[in-house]
Image 1 (cartoon, rainbow, N blue to C red):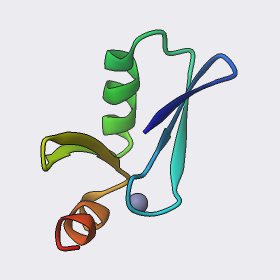
Image 2 (cartoon, rainbow, N blue to C red; image 1 turned 90 degrees about the horizontal axis):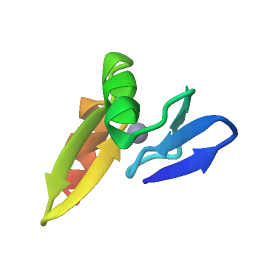
Image 3 (cartoon, rainbow, N blue to C red; image 1 turned 60 degrees about the vertical axis):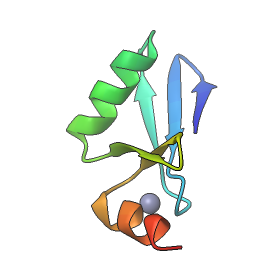
Image 4 (spheres, rainbow, N blue to C red; image 1 turned 30 degrees about the vertical axis):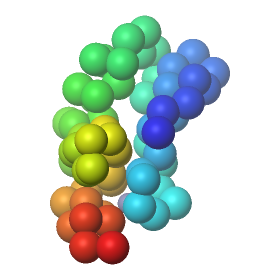
Length: 64
Ligand SMILES: [Zn+2]
């Protein structure tokens, strides 16, 4: 999940309560690239795109 925040975006992990603030981004592409460089990943589960703060959260969510 991604929210608009201040002058950028806030990306929330879809498994835990972690989030990352991406300042000065104007497009989702920029948000994803910036988050990815901080170790965040974007994966599709049951046809829905989700954001995770790392591989561990992705694995945890996928096994639920
Ligand atoms: Zn997480």
